[in-house]
Every structure is written in C-alpha cells, then in structure tokens.
Amino acid sequence: MKNTAPVHSGRHFLQIPGPTNVPDRVLHAMSFPTIDHRGPEFSTLGKDVIAGMKRVFQTAGAVVMYPSSGTGAWEAALVNTLSPGDRAVMFETGHFATLWRQMAGRLGIDIEFVSGDWRHGVDPARVEELLSRDREHRIKAVCIVHNETSTGVTSRVGEVRAAIDHARHPALFMVDTISSLASIDYRHDEWKVDVTVGGSQKGLMLPPGLGFNAVSDKALAAAKDARLPRSYWDWQPMLETGHTGFFPYTPGTNLLYGLREALAMLLDEEGLGNVFARHVRHGEATRRAVAGWGLETVCLDPREHSNSLTAVFVPEGHDADRLRDTILDAFDMSLGTGLGKLKGKIFRVGHLGHFNDLMLCGTLCGVEMGLAAARVPHKSGGVAAALEFLGQR
Ligand SMILES: *Cc1c(COP(=O)(O)O)cnc(C)c1O
Image 1: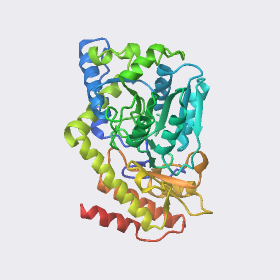
Image 2: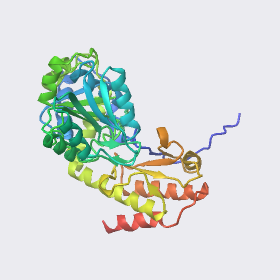
Image 3: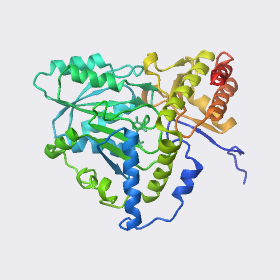
C-alpha cells in the first residue's frame, strides 16, 4: 500500500503558539520511572516545583497546581472565589477571552462582557469607567486575558491594575497568563493580581497537562465565602503542597519531573529576565518580517504586540488555512490556525518557549517560501529584514 502522506526528514517545526517545542532534556527528565507520590522522594519534588513556580509568577503567595489543561485552571479560578449570580466584568479581546466568558456563564456568574474588535487589548480607561460607575460594588471580579493567543495582542496588566486602584474598587483581579507565563514579563504580586491562571504547554516548554493558579491572600479570603460548587478544583487541600510537597490526589508525576527541569533552564540557567528579553527580540524580528512581506498583523496598537506569537492576515480573497496546509506539506512546519471569527483569515506564528535565532530564521523562511508556493501576494524581503535585525544583536 502506498503511503500518500508526504515523507519528511529532519525535525518537524512546531511553530504554533502552544503546545510548544519541548526541550530534549525535559523529555528525558520525564522518562524516569514514576515514583510513589506518598513517599519521601516525592515530597522534595513537590516542594521544589511549587517554589520554582512562585518565582515564575513573581509571587511570595500561594501557588496551586492541577493535573489539567489550562481550561481547568480557568475553572478553578472562578469556582474558588465567586458565588452564583455574582457579577464579573470580562473583555472580548479574542477567542480565549470569549471561551472563558462562556465558561463563567455556564457556572452561573453574571457577566458583563465588554465587546471588542479582536485587534486591541483591554482598555484600562474602560475598566476605570466601569468600576467607578459601580458605586455599590456589585462587581466582584475583573477577569482578563494577558496574552490573547488568538490575536497576538498583549493587554497591559499593570495599567489595568492602576485603573482598578483609581476607581477605588474592591473587585478581585484575575488574569489568564496561559500563553505569556515564562515568555512575557508578568508580576503577580507587584500588579496585585488575585488569581493568575497558567498552563504547562506554552512558555513553560512542557507537554500539555498541568494547570496553575497563583493566589493572593485576598483571593484566599474570598474563597472562604465563595459558594459556587467545587470539589476537584478546591484550593484548600492543594494549599498544603507548598509545605508538605504532597498533593491531595495523584499528581502528574512525570510532568513534574519535566517541570523541575524546565524551571532549572528558565530560572537558574538562562534567567527570567533574559528569557523575556529573548522573546522581545524574536517578537520584533518577526514583526519586521511581516512588514517586509507587506502583510498586516492583527494587533493594531504598537504597545500591545505580543512577544510570544504573531498573528498575520493574508490578503483578502486568500485562504490562510490553504497557506498553512501548503507550508505543512512542503516544509513540515505547523503554524497556528485562525480561531473563531478569524478562521481562514489569519495564520499565527509561535515564537515562544524553547526557541532561538536559527529556529526563528527557519520558521520565517518557511513562511516566506510558503507564501510564494501558495501564490499569496506579498513583497520579498521579509526574511532579509528579520535577518538584518537579528544580525545587529
Ligand atoms: C491555550 C490557552 C488556553 C487554553 O488552554 P488549554 O490548555 O487548551 O485548556 C486558554 N487561554 C489562553 C490565553 C491560551 O493561550
């Protein structure tokens, strides 16, 4: 029987904005035998990874960790802090914000969903206006997505925090950092975020399967009165892990081996500051390539360009998914598809996680060759513009 799928040699390029490339050392660390999760060796592992994650979140407070996707950690944030009928404000920055909003609605939270054009982040002025108007403090939470993975737009979390403070409003502040954590500077304590939501498969360079909440004291206090039903997601039994190293139920042990290795790479070897700077540089190089091709990014505000991914429109009348298929067939590279209303209109280039200059060059070459192969109108010189920028160092 003839195999009709193209045969490729060399490494596949996984340039979607998550799951991202997993370093060989992380895969190797994960291949060790699973141990007794109630035994002494496990305790050290549990304590180490929680301590490391606190550094990643830039918090001295509590971090809880679930064997879950990021979506599970979204649910944990809501059910631990809110009660049925509580009002929360969310912002339509894109597909992921819309999904989180849908979840909140299903859980019985009363959502004010501020509409958006999917090309801008959360407007801090709008936050201040909404909260200032709410004199009776009916709004219990403001929930935003830091880095909208569907659009490549990064909201200015520090400015949103300042807006909440200006309004002198006591609402909880919850932030989804699933595609920004350990790629784009993020400060849970400094920005007084109450619940930060994270996942393993993007900036943390792990396979999917771990969900995180970083939790402020104010959120812990809110959890005491919160009445949404919760069981699996209850923070309470999870809070002990930071002290004992043990989890209330079977954790994803081998993913934790991988996490320990990834944390060593991010925190101790490269250093978080350098990790962020690397992503800034690769984001800029990618945007120069896009400009060189004469194409348009989804993000319209230069202050909000994402440094973990770039979302790019194909010209009107062309199908972005056909371009992606061409690139996958010809060059064995996966790019992110357009999500929700952007389906077919855009492709997304992931440049986060385990990544370097030459991987970016390969990625951008694949896009440029793919644009030509799929006959998508563009100017030449995108890769050249990126190379010139990268060459300046
Ligand atoms: C990937 C992602 C999610 C969803 O995470 P899953 O692990 O697929 O559940 C949510 N929010 C953002 C911003 C993401 O990038």
